[in-house]
Length: 286
Image 1 (cartoon, rainbow, N blue to C red):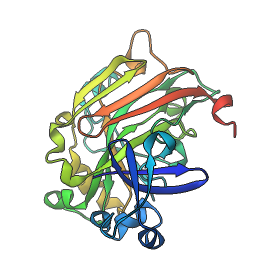
Image 2: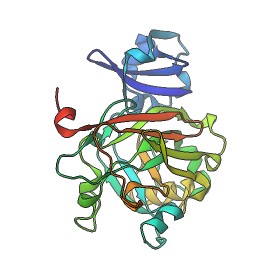
Image 3: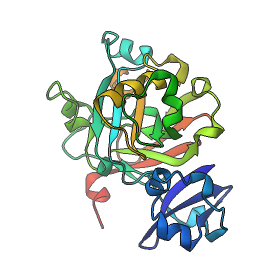
Image 4: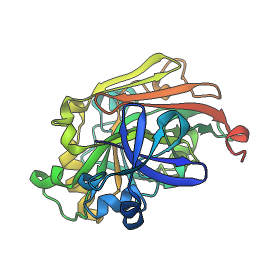
């Protein structure tokens, strides 16, 4: 299934995307599970529509939200593709490089991402994201895939000068609506082997990044094993697995994002996440 979260008018909801339509669960299901995170936590994803669907919406008439608009945590992995490690002049790490993003730093599919007014070094990083499906702590590698609800595309927008103010990445990775996730969450059963997936990022139609998920230094089971050791992973938590070579900072001259650009992150089988870039003044208007 392809699951989406969205707004229609001033109401937030979620449902199953089929073609160009979105089917909400019926009212009884929504009352028990008001958002996708709660449906995942109750292990009810397979029950979506079991009692019949409620409203149907044309995808063109809704505002997409990140598939999980309210995760408990978003854990991101840096330096996890050899091509990106090499272009940034770093060494292969001994352990996963983990940093966090806040939910407010995300936009949904087709929503604008905001170019901060305090920097001209706003960069793109296309990634594969995994969404956790159940409480998980001290997960062994062999059991890691059992903890996954599904997969999505992710754009880890990075404000490079702020990222490098200190040894910690937090500032440069958490500007308001600087990143994005979507267009939907593809449930785990539809992806037989995530290592077979490919990742591409385009800016205004120009190919910038291209890589294979098989090239991760720390693969998905390793990341779940590691992250679940220091934190209890909760349903709806997001792990962004890292970016491939080709980021704007590594180009000559650098290719920074600016208002008017269109960023597209595509992972095979997971759709294409599209986000226009706007300046901060425009992006913060009501």
